[in-house]
Length: 475
Image 1 (cartoon, one colour):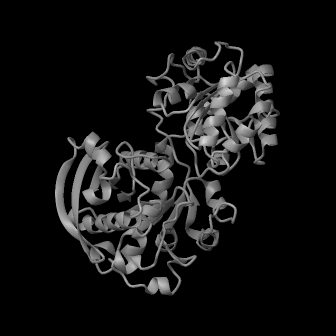
Image 2 (cartoon, helix red, strand yellow):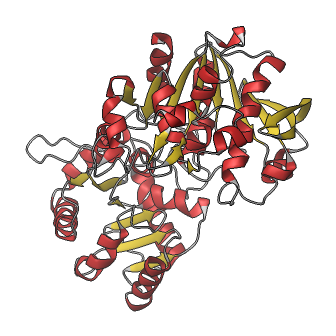
Image 3 (spheres, helix red, strand yellow):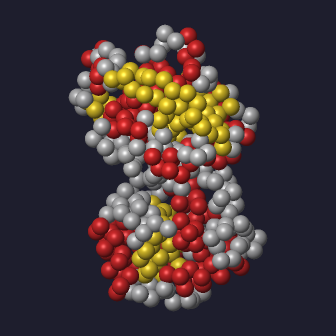
């Protein structure tokens, strides 16, 4: 098949979160199965600074963004047999950041129009056009309503993936004529209208041939008022074409047997290196070196979504246990300050690292016994999969992708890959922690069995990509 991805970010070129990881990894896996894959991204100044010397100019043309005639430069690089095309326009994309400008609507309207008009010019007409999140959600609509007269485009099937339903792209309706150059009929008849605004995500859900999200549980959750962020009615209406596919992780990069950031390598058959990593991490972050104490890791954005209101509220009680906690992340000032305060007042128990450091993150995954991830909602989540790969057992709120990837320990069957609580409250967080610590201290053999279960899970993209491939073939 010929498959084209269009997205606002993609690793290693530009990445702010999980979307960037997916666009970096999924195309690579699809190519291994004999598919021809192209990815279209905006050409940001950060990409120019880092990769400009390797990227070649292909062609340029002009696109009408409403009444504006805008320059489109097309650049290209091939990596891992995936052709990455970049849409270049300095006015729109040389901003020092990816999102958050007052004219994001115009920037991504231009990007979508440019990506569609580029396909003929680079002679890549895909069988499947796979778009991601609100920044590219108008593409299925444009294929069917604006560019339907182009014969080559008439056979294209579209897939729209929701990575986070919170960000929907809500704009004033005049944008349809002013930027996209189409009439307002579909707004007037209610198709594109939601809460008296033009809603790009609604357009993507209604017009795409298939809609996916990043875990089966999240696909169910976004059909409820609690998680649907106002679009739950539309998600229920379109449930027949909605499915959830769990993201993968890069298992070549995230490998305890080869990870260059670890003090000692280890494997599912020989976990002895994990103790050396624990000692090295305790030294690095200034905690007492003890092999008999459970070390709990947090690598996260410190926000409400990630459940840190629960953690901060319960931390006093949690620290009554004999344990150590190492925190790495930035986020809301309240949470940053709270963890810093506990680090200051409990220096033997808490190390607060309010920063982002890739090397330290890998060392936390490799060295800790438990990994704390009590998210309020979590479309997929990657950290819990990374932790399990390193035999670090996740303690999670059973929601979204966390519910789909972490099997709570069952003491009767000696099964499971971590620990979970399904009532989002400090009481249940603390209760589950106490249960996990009991297993750690008093049931060592069970603990090691859970570690091996966790490490034997297959979260590779090569497996995850097969589900996408069968979806494409269905189309």
